[in-house]
Length: 240
Image 1 (cartoon, rainbow, N blue to C red):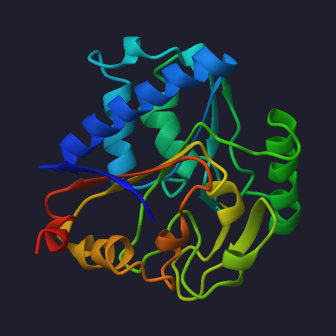
Image 2: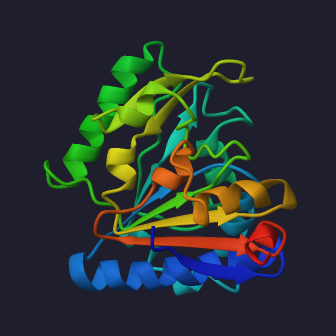
């Protein structure tokens, strides 16, 4: 791994740093291709970022009509559910800015395997068939080292598909759709946003020990950038 690590003092600083990174990646994408394709994640840290991007301080900095928005993963819940990653982004960002095109994951479908293939077809329709290469993929990380809905020890980690239907044992919402490592590692930039002391040991295991058992360790774009944005609490064990 050769990550770029951005250290921040507070969680709100992580959101601000992420906004700056996204702006940089957007400018590069628009200059080279005229479109900015980004995949979003759920969680409390992305929520702060979404609110910031929609704020008066930031919203006019972006070329929203040139955005194409996707999701890294989604829980098998209705889009109106408070557990929906789509709803989180819609309520806090996408409903507040003139974004171009939005492609929610159809995780509320009855057959998730069919839904995974349907979303894979959507990806192929927006990219060159042989190369699904996002300009920016926003990721979080759980204390167990999972990212997107790629959890330790699950078969989806070895999948050659673009999108997988997964079921996570003992999880309150076990059924999900997720990008695979094939998609994550094809990106021009993967950007991890991680905050909180409870994740500091996992951050250490991923970034220092490079523990391959942890899915987050296996995110390392083949030709793109790997960026980790950490608050002081999450980075605590890296300082020792």
